[in-house]
Length: 294
Image (cartoon, rainbow, N blue to C red; front, top):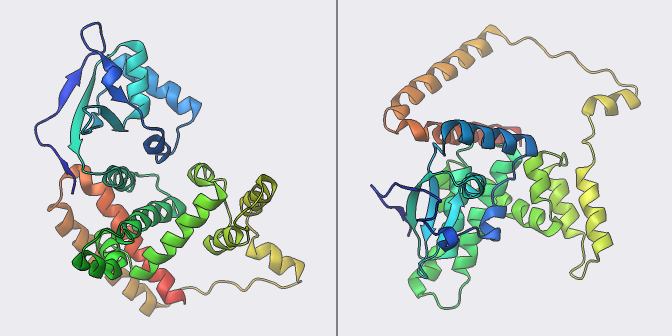
């Protein structure tokens, strides 16, 4: 298991007295985090220069080979390294690369601008890594017995159902097969989860570059709007009925209950975890809405 080492925050000054050659950027880990735009990077650099360094600590993993690997703060590290500006950091410890990758994904789950597809992708990666661990041939019988509960554990940890976790796993595999992880982060994929999975399944094992590109383009097309379909068929959309007083009363009761629950929960968690807590509560509501619509 991994843990954040307490009271290990320090500051590195990239000058002649500090050799940064021992701090590395792992391409696989960096690719797990959505890339920022050129404008965002320029703004980040301006903020760092104005502050005389980085305010938010980087997260570094000290590996067994005594190399430090950046897990959070790749852009901040590159800017400070180039401009020779100081940066604080937190140290974390892991036993395996999978644990480090899980930390990155779980850290990303706390992002404020997390989209629905981003959330599924992150949950799917965490689940699929855990499944691969369960498929190892060197595990004990007790560890093998735990394999069937992988989806349950991931679901419990992130406040969603087992069905959601398993669907997220299929979605993540399809995204990886199509090579559209970056497109998901940029929000240019408007196809549904089912369409993305179907596009990946349609590819043969020895798919050519042309076939993969065609599959990618098929899921990047603009989503068809229900209103346009109805217009082409000559149908008129039915007006949405106003909610009844009974429905309004129920909605108010639910809203009051949610507010009370939030007031109780937020006091039990530090402020820096409130965004993640909101994401979990929102995910539960989204999942219940999906289940009700089936």
